Length: 135
Image: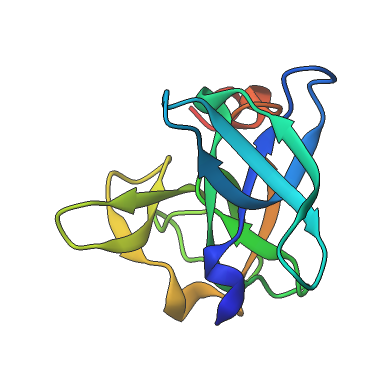
């Protein structure tokens, strides 16, 4: 489960997604380290937009894609009428766990049991239209 320590966030200079380890300077400015050598000298470090920082859940969806906080997921099994189909992965501080907040059904579910039944279809930063179509 070492992937759960990964983060993804948008770089400030290019607005592209970067995946790596999140660090903060003594002033609190966040950076993402995407590459380092065997002595832990940083090779690639980028300033990031702190509003887009998403922690990895350590789990993969049914297609083998890593799931991150703020990802939009869709059920791929055949839900019955009234069951949730689209959700957002969120971190719940009270339960110290990643949960799925279902958009079309006001419930939360633990992420782990769903990993074989859902696929990541986007995220709340790049794909807000996916959420609007489900309301």
